[in-house]
Image 1 (cartoon, rainbow over the protein chains, first blue to last red):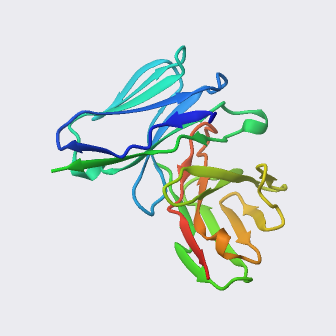
Image 2: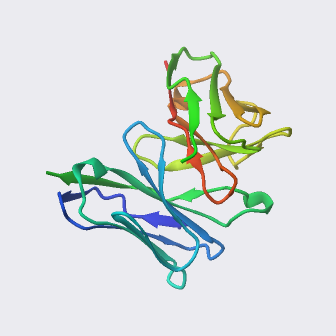
Length: 115
Length: 115
């Protein structure tokens, strides 16, 4: 079983739709949660970062963490064609020790927003 | 956000040659940088942790004699793929934490093709 599970999709939605992306994890030591967006043949771009259960909002994006269920989500409101990309969830146990800075990624979900 | 650059963005080489990839943090210092590899339609896999002033630490299954890492300064890490073979063809991405180890900023990636 992978430490982080993410449905690879692909996911296709019409412009303006609300998109829900999800990851589950098995390692209870994960304390920090991130969402990255990756366009084709580019490096990942940090979208959201959070370390506590609950919601965090930034513009059209909302990150949700439920540590008790080991489940995180990213919601995209009013989706745009420019949101078409691969979305990767990532997690870490935090600073200190041999796990310093190491991220564990989900497989990534391919999203297409069509006009 | 913080900026991380990589050079070259793309390289094509013959089997048996060595290829050097540079990763630079442009607006912050990074005592630690990370190297990832990403195969088509797959997620990022951590290869090694680059430590300024000390030896790199490699993930299980990564050959340290094949993937040489040198963290020459607080803003530069290099990855050298020695005696490259076609199976080393991949997308190599570096990352660096801008202070907080639980977030990472990624470079744009280097696409290596070994003929």
